Length: 276
Image 1 (cartoon, rainbow, N blue to C red):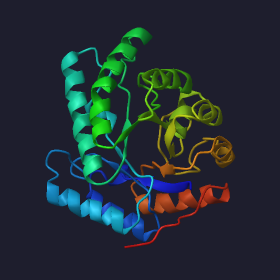
Image 2: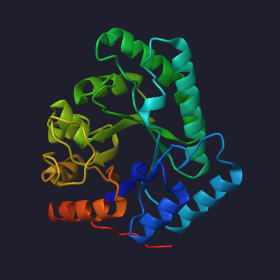
Image 3: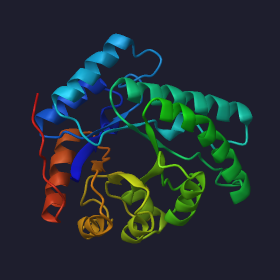
Image 4: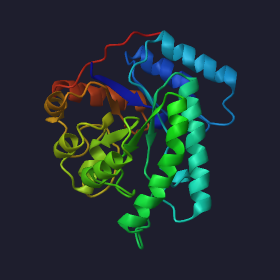
């Protein structure tokens, strides 16, 4: 069953992940995309006891179709520098371990950033990223975690065509796609068309609002993403996982509620979860 969940990015600087899950569960959500970002959710310093406590909470609230997301500013799987790729692979190894430890089976992967002035060619960026994914995939599989590679405007594969070609070339059911509607719209892609093109690969869908002038992840209604027709497309392609509200706003709960209300009016699912 498709559910609407929440990405915890707006809590990154001021609320521990476990407290954000409690707050969102009290609002009725049971699908979460936890953002790895200190102090919200660190990696190495997040000890075994903290992991057990967060895992128990996710189990208690009946979390479904959840994921873990490592933001892209501090790593780069498509870097021309081998040292940066090594560092980035290690960051994702730790993220995979964290996800597995807390009972989440999906990690969102930004496929490396490109220089806006002298970007790597398709052959180079594909080779860089393939090498990293091939190093990560056995570890992810051993921990019961899938990788969902995201369409990001400044990343190696920003559109459905190039992203789908790359992911299909890996040839593993454990590597799919996280499709972000706002990212697609800002890049100039029709989100509905992108969803159809990637139908066999999508593991997570992100929704927020933006224009095509300035890249944003605003509350729904503040931009011009054509989100209204998306539920029909998701039904057509048989998508039955999470639609994650990835909204960055100083008032997270207010932005989440107002955005979800507008989405429900357009045919998206309502909250179905229980509070703690």
